[in-house]
Length: 294
Image (cartoon, rainbow, N blue to C red; front, side):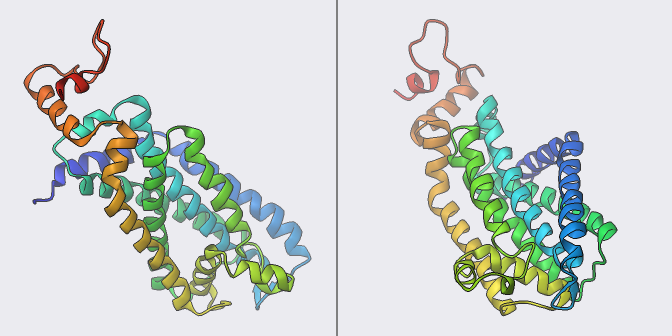
């Protein structure tokens, strides 16, 4: 099957245009949050903690804050990107278009990861104003940033697909990801924790992501770098398997509520009759796609 480049480009460009239209909200909010983190943690707490592993406290928290931004932005950007068409009904245009599921997933995930990397670059530039930031392994840093962005953008796509409302979509980013980042050594070293909480932290996968990114910056880490890379690759594989196995069922049955065979009849009916057949007609007791599938 030939890859539909124009269909992929249409969705990708549409998502990037939406990002440009809301660039103030998309970039200004993370910049303000990062600045406040440096003012509160870097200046106040940094006055009591001079250095950690030979690195000043302000510089030490840069990878953690960058990882916090990457995780939250990649999930929220992609989940909102696929959920909003469901909310306003424009998902029907994508379903009726001659574009495959793979192309749709790549477009939404690619756009979400691109937006995340742009915001991450802005956060990196912002952090440079507050602390001395050095990168010992720039290629490793770029590799980790791209890998994390695409992995969690794919995770965000899955969240957006299975969510039925905005509350469900925001549960994982706000109640799971953010606490895991703060408990993952983003603002402190694990050696500063009591033994019990150190043991608990070992079961937090975000610990290894932050540790790997910090190693690319300063060459210091609590774990082997391959453990960090392996954890990210493993999570990426899990997400890819989830998409390969469940995206078709989730896309049609749960998101749209349309069986595959009924959707095929409805698409044919759209092309042959009138474009409004996706809506309930006047006096009709059920949507047109159900009557078209009978």
